[in-house]
Image (cartoon, rainbow, N blue to C red):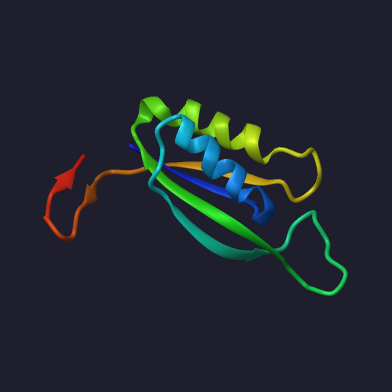
Length: 100
C-alpha cells in the first residue's frame, strides 16, 4: 500500500475530486495547509493550499498520481507537489481489523 500526499491549489480541489471518482477513488482526506514556496503573495507570508491524502494499493499509484497531475497542472508556480510514501498497514478502529 502507498500513501499519496498531494499538495494542490485550493482552486484545483473540485476538479481533482471529480477526476479521482472516474478512476474509482471516492474516499480520501483533505486538509488545509499553509506553505512557503515559489508562489509569493503580496499580503501574506505564506500560501494556503489543500492536501489530499489517499491510501491506495501499489498498483493504483501511477493511475492516481497521473489523474492528480493532469487535474492540478496549470504550469504556474504554486501548482503543488505529489509525494508517495510506503504504508506498512492500516487498522480500522471500529472493527479492529488490520490490513497489510
